[in-house]
Length: 154
Length: 427
Image (tube, rainbow over all chains, first blue to last red; front, side, top):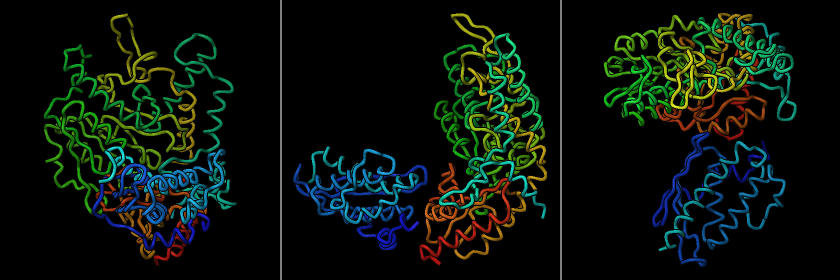
């Protein structure tokens, strides 16, 4: 229990960072977890073009369990103001962390990349909750991909 | 209080195991799937060990014995719900049972649209624009989505009986919802999320009045109360094997003899035909018409053993036992601050699926803490998402009981909920 609900997760759950939908944004997505009904609406705002684009803002409105709520909040902290390429690397590290219990080939988690997101390591032990933790991250990836495929930031 | 002897728990091997670091298993998720007594496991294994052969074909000794065992299972299960063996179709699960009926409407309508020959009587399944299909707002997705599909394919209109605030159906405008345009009314006997037991007689009587066929989802009633399909006044009854102590992979569709006789087939292929030429085929009589391919023989035999077990304990006694547990659970939850039952709060006309929400806590987190205590509950929308929307909750936590549960397991549930409230600091 305590391994799953790290203090960082509970803090972000009680006091989420970056929550609320804001302007400007280049893409908005809505993702759901059909097994439990958790939902997130997420917007991304990128600045700059192509490889040098940075994540200027991630704004979101979500409902769901503590894991999915805290995950969105931690993601906001980890990714905002990062170059898009760097943020994508954090995303990959987080996905790898979530699969670490079931994927024997997964290496050691990259603590430098993950920062506070490392607190979700315990979630990987509960396969039913992995989708909760990934909901916001997958929404973010979807939104950024949409922006980049439509010619990048304004 | 009329509780069953807790000694019957010894018949269910899995109940002896521990979970999450040595905690006794408190299994409160029987509405999702029930546990299996040893006699069911033995029946399935014994079939494979001693009788296994393809049924309904071949003339060798084992084939005869296997066919006999399969058809005996059919008769046993049919008798358990008060029906004739000839009217009972084995399917893979109750979802397939509903789809078997809903598909008849789609396929008959599609055939009629281009003038393909319809079997005599099959025209009653042809839908036309303006025709209506009626469901209720409390349906499991399995008795909702197939009818949405039927409407999309045929141009018929979907209507539904709404929920009232108390977790029961609002029947005040029943005659306005089930009209002369209604061709089929599909509804649930006992809600899997709210626990509500619906007044079948009222709904079925109105459907008959307007000439609509009726399809009853009895997944949550057949395992928990005496059900006599012939006295329900409906045309089709779908139920599931694995929710009534039987194996997974087997469900049932009972149909009224004369309606089943007119019903076009669902899956087609081997074993369901009468004659086959290169141009066309004719189909076998029910129930074989609806059992294409090699059937789930061992599972049907396991299900028959489950019905014999249920009969031995006695369905009236099981219903009384679960009623007592439901009363205890509702009272215990009512005493918990910050906990609200979603569904009827009295045990009258109500089954043992008890959904609730906890102020300030998401059901996933409640379920996680309960799981840590060894208490298995279901969290989520329970495949009844419209019900959650209707009551303004994203999801619920659901405890559901069966004949093997005992009052101390309700205590474990209550303790777990309290611990979740303390852990997340919402008390």
